[in-house]
Length: 451
Image 1 (tube, rainbow, N blue to C red):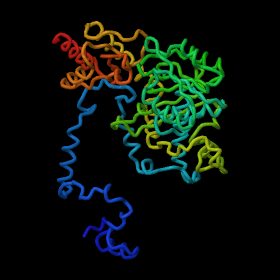
Image 2 (tube, helix red, strand yellow):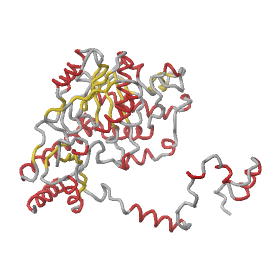
Image 3 (cartoon, helix red, strand yellow):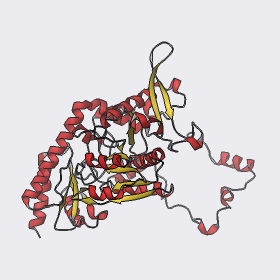
Image 4 (cartoon, rainbow, N blue to C red):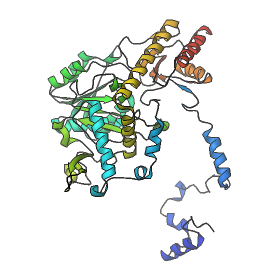
């Protein structure tokens, strides 16, 4: 009756008879009865395609996203404009159905995409070489820490508390099972306390991890961090939450970074309720062979034509397991393709324009909030497009009132930094208009006056 359903009652009976089992339930006899559900799933009655479509639309309608709300929330995932051409390209079947290029000689298109992505990430970060991308920014940071430990033969990592809290949690999880010590550095006025950093870095330190701009949006002084790290023969690992910032700031490579990692969501990938995203990772030519994952290289074929090859594959599926740098397998190829198309579409000038617009608008919003008297400054340091301000009410209440006005408010900093009570982290991207920013300020002022 339904040819697209391969196994009907007849086929089910044949399979059960073949393995000499009387019912499907017998297949689960090894599972103790007390842990079985003991009833049918409460899925409701069957629906036609039309009914199911309406039902799913109704459920989806309960969510509100950046299409319905004015977004001032960042904290690691950013509402940047995504050019329409990106979806048209990434929706092509040869891209979204492609997987690992196990046969490089017939995967030239996939390999070229990865090669171009690597080249652009290397240029953006100011590093010599990039791998073919990783799971996300947090795991990329953990992999960089492992890489630093492997290269230096040391067993301690120092990380600033201004690095994204979720990244630090993932880092600690990875390091815990590798027996690597993780030391956290306090912050002073929103940026890494360099004097405390000096006291923690030792002859056993493999790497120092800082975020640029940091979780509070503040632009860290990497020159001081580089001096401390390299002065102790440790590696400087720079984590970047939004690579768009590199359109306006000096690249980590220019400032002496050994490894640069980050989250590539902002490069044309939608927010997607938190994923999937991609992690980027770049390093110096000296450390190239220590990079996890794979690297695509460019060469000439027998006819002298441009060709692409899997140059390095430091993973357990391709080399002896004990020689593998990491067991990472997926390179988030479709998300990396999205990033490559975004960078190509925007170009150097476009990335710079997005960065500068975000910065100008963020500073306008910050100044208006302080000028109005509805918010107070939390830190006094240069920031890119995210900033912290203090409120007189709890951030839960503030965000609730903003939501009623059609605004997605900021991140409650007290969730991860208890000392920052009633402080919110707001983000302004190039998508925000002056009218939207003025509306945010107006609603915040009304809250203050209504107390």
